[in-house]
Image (cartoon, rainbow over all chains, first blue to last red):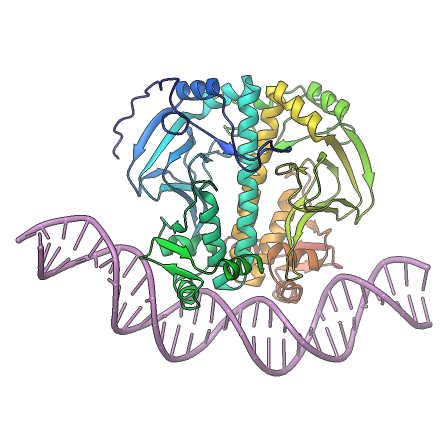
Amino acid sequence: MATRSKAARNAPSSTPAGDTAPSLRAVLFGQAEGRGPVQLLSRSQQAQLTHLATRVRLPAQTILYREDAVASAVYLVSDGVIKTFRDLPSGKRRVVAFLFSQDIFGLAENGVYVNTAQAVTPVTLYRVQTDTLVETLRRDPELDFQFLMKVTHELRQAQRHTIAVSRRDAVGRVAMFLHMLEHQTDAAMRSAVIRVPMSRSDMANYLGMSLEAVSRAAGALERSGIVAFSGRHTARILDRARFDALVAAL
Amino acid sequence: MATRSKAARNAPSSTPAGDTAPSLRAVLFGQAEGRGPVQLLSRSQQAQLTHLATRVRLPAQTILYREDAVASAVYLVSDGVIKTFRDLPSGKRRVVAFLFSQDIFGLAENGVYVNTAQAVTPVTLYRVQTDTLVETLRRDPELDFQFLMKVTHELRQAQRHTIAVSRRDAVGRVAMFLHMLEHQTDAAMRSAVIRVPMSRSDMANYLGMSLEAVSRAAGALERSGIVAFSGRHTARILDRARFDALVAAL
DNA sequence: CGTCCGTTTGAGGATCATCAATGTCCGTGG
DNA sequence: CCACGGACATTGATGATCCTCAAACGGACG
């Protein structure tokens, strides 16, 4: 639905990264000059990707692909939030990951997608044909290496996710989730309030607990004065010390 | 689509890979000719890695590196089993992953290891200096691409791990673990018995449950006639149907 | 043959899932 | 602008499951 503005506009080379050109962000293997995430793509690499990719804007709830479907494209998130999930025989749903700005998704296995991907918010994505991307990567070591680092970064995210889910206490898991959301934003642009774009139900499916437990845990955090919720999609850390303690106290 | 799939186009070498040369195994993005894992490295790539890498044999329990240590090397598993884990403030330990033949580990974050790595069994490894590897990858797109696929594969493993851990029933989680071990071996070389090299305690730390719960779950599997354990390190699936049902029935 | 570490087994208590009902937000349309 | 509807979220009560604490058992190794 809504395949509007699929025009692959060649971005002017003088535009800032992220707005009009594909961008990746990850953490280096080796010592980084400045600590933390680094802009990975050079100007020319962005230009190259722009040439290969199609920029698409999609409304919330759009399904990008389904589990087991033949994989045709890889996506880079420019703006908005994506979730990937798997529906289980029991009817339960497990959210495998949330993807944010500069994340990659759609890496298939044997030519088939392993999860379903759906937009949580309105999103802007870069779509690259798998064939094209693979061919390019095999020829461009630098670009390839950036992808390697990016996927490595997502691997570590997944490992942290695993640790979070393995916790048995509900409030701790929800706290870790908020912590994750908070650190999704660049440290510089981080504000006191945490935006929570997804529903409680999505949170529950990501954290491997029931929707009710999430609700109760959020209530507990609020009641104990650690976090304040304004509406359902905004949170604010009131007591940083106790919050961090909860997050760390696995 | 992905009709092209020349990724595994490597001349069958006379020496079985893994014994004398570094090897990687993963699943392609695109459609593979034969389903399942594929030998990824060409003869020349193996030679190249052999030149860069040091082959080391280490006894069980050897610690390869510790969490937060400055990262100097990346490892390829040739033989044996490795575990990576993180110790939590509470004193609990979470096993992040088990690494088997042809797996990679030791990919650092900002020059620092994020987990501790320890040999579960006697192991044979290839150790490559991080600097050297990075330099090589930046120059060799093909090799780089193989690493990308390998890490992608490990990412999916981690995602499955997350789903397994999110289960609430003990027997199901243990069943999934056995299933994972079974599929670690190549389909061809797979026998009726599953070798379980790690301790119950390691299993518990991997599955996010108590050691006692693992023990009880194993007992339940045995009592219900689904799995037979011979000693603590060997299992055999007796009732494949019910076993698969348990694994899938999330 | 005895020790030691890992494992098994048992009882009690805490936590979360489930079922069910009520309450709230938000977009839609009048 | 307000009223309405439906999806989402909160709250309550009950039961199942697993964790914790504690003790007995078993195999590996000297």
